[in-house]
Length: 409
Ligand SMILES: Nc1nc2c(c(=O)[nH]1)N[C@H]1C(S)=C(S)[C@@H](COP(=O)(O)OP(=O)(O)OC[C@H]3O[C@@H](n4cnc5c(N)ncnc54)[C@H](O)[C@@H]3O)O[C@H]1N2
Ligand code: MOO
Picture 1 (cartoon, protein in one colour):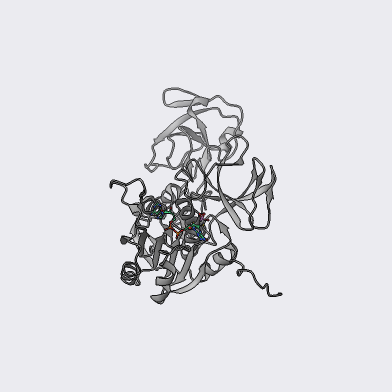
Picture 2 (picture 1 turned 90 degrees about the horizontal axis):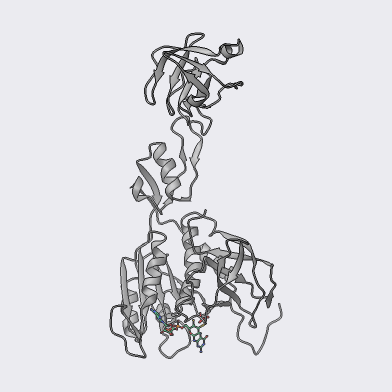
């Protein structure tokens, strides 16, 4: 490729940055946790069915079980041989010409092969008359193994454990489950103008929303930083705080990464032996983001201070990294049609907040007044992607959508 002279070097594209981040992704190990603690964690090993499911021929209704052979001979009145409740074994095989009274969830003995709903019968004393005209073999019986067979993979891995996964794991007796270990994280915010949420602020100070935004984003993954500190804008303070955090798996920071006189973060990180993977990407918002490799094999993400830039770079880079560390092929990206035309004037890939219209399932761009807008992300389901090379996205054009929810996998 011809060398471009006189121009600033081209910024790295998001796809290349994500590819790079992926190469440094690694498992943090695995651990056993109690089933109820696994909610929101990533299952590390596939779970097989310990037996057939259903484990026995299960009656799906409250009613009467017969043999279809008797029915086919024209029999409609059956003496009731015994009553079978759920969890209760039958006493005797069904004798020809008899019926069992049977409850939902009870095991249908193999000597019977059809169950009628109670409503479809006339119940007499010790006998029942069937009032419907047809029968099919195994009607109203969920047959042994028809859902899942013994040793079949029931829950694949990796999978994000959600209530349905908990349900399946509980059904097969997994009281303890093997999940991916969580990384040890140090979280830092920076900026002399940034004050705690509960402190008084002067007119030129702002509240530390990024701390809470980032902690909330981490909680989606059940992650909790084991170190948090707000660092003033001096090299010395940055140096000290980061140095003490070098043994973590991840260091996440906000602020101090662009071109200001007090933006020391990339410099201090590199002075401490952190190898730069990239600084500045061809994206908006979030362009000044820095990513580096820790000497211990961990990773540093230093995000821009603007809250919307933080949200976007967390979603595009940190979540991308976590997905790969936990064994997924990246996060889910969906395709949706755009509700209205959208234009941009720059050559960066732009990420804009969108709401999925419930009636038309199109993406409605939401208004954000720049990356410092404290409303950014409010009411949004996720991000729409405006590719770098396209200046205009047409109404109805299919574009990529990145969900803010990590529950769909
Ligand atoms: N000359 C240039 N200036 C800027 C560039 C550039 O390329 N050249 N990039 C701009 C972009 S884009 C962004 S984004 C910001 C990123 O700046 P920093 O990462 O250095 O962040 P700060 O300057 O520290 O803060 C930016 C903004 O965010 C507020 N902030 C910081 N921390 C928090 C926090 N914890 N909670 C809430 N808000 C926070 C801060 O007060 C600033 O308003 O740089 C542009 N400049
Ligand atoms: O691109 Mo910066 O991340 O918007 O304000």
